[in-house]
Image (cartoon, rainbow, N blue to C red; front, side, top):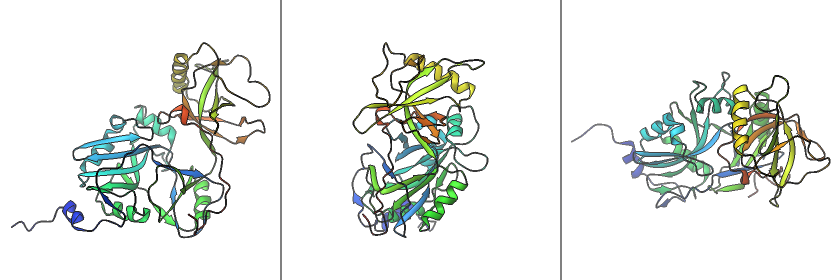
Length: 346
């Protein structure tokens, strides 16, 4: 008789799943759960507080030997992060679905979207890491109807925590203190999640977020020619969709580009040249003359200090391209100022 160690998968299957777990196939992953932007943090111990990572959101889907890394809009990125895929393949559960963020860290340990893009494109030797913060399926059990704290407890039991796989730490309570500390360290912000909530795709009020600085995705509407010693292009001109589906002009972005990015962006916008400007609305004076308009298909991320009274970005800086989000989904996030989100709210 074999008196060796038991297979961890057998031990897990012998235990009862958490309340709410359902036997069946993996859940359909049409969209991840997304936080609602707010202006004040929720208070009390009903919430988990987690760092908001500066990366690409991914589902990691394991079906026996096969692993897929899927972006929020359904693209297969397995080939872009092969080390992560191999690490997921090596973890004990034969079937599992994880939700997390693909990131690259700066020297100071802070996640950086710029470093992530360089690593993915092969221009940096920084390793890609996958921070996992949720477990949606395990060994034939759909966990999406379970409480978040139960899902995290199941996730913590898995013997898988070595690079490139990392677990996303969380705290309970002291939400405002954690937010202040995050901003002091130069992090993007904090995500707050109700401990008793199931997993619900799309934007919900059971996940909230606060940003340390203005930063959003925008659709590129056009570009201007370079001047002086500048190459590629001078500035990108960007916009966003409003709740009514109209494209709104938000101004120009002329800083933050590397020489490689200027050249790559110029190649892209040249392919997107239309016969006429895209239809959009604007407030105040018309956009400047000399803009080369393009089809509204390219999505970029921009950091900024604020908005003018006419809906133009102030002190905007290019951060990077967003290949994981279609242009039609770039709807400007307006902070939800409903202050009813407290320990007892649902």
